[in-house]
Length: 51
Image (tube, rainbow, N blue to C red; front, side, top):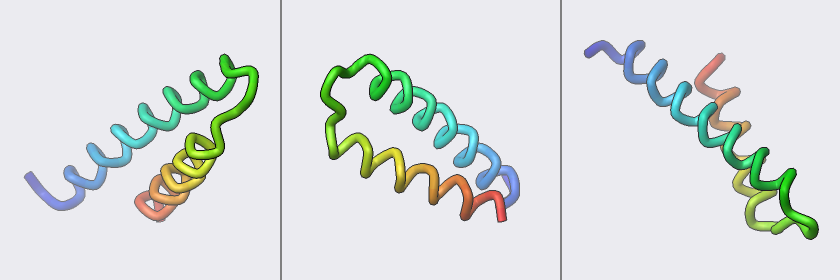
């Protein structure tokens, strides 16, 4: 497996995780600050892999 393929897989997995976090945050009445921080970090990681 090439490095490009590894990055592609990692990015896909992070996008799935971000979607799950968004769904979880949307169902919570009081948003968990830890989930917000995690969402922000996952989004930054996706952006870094996209560059």
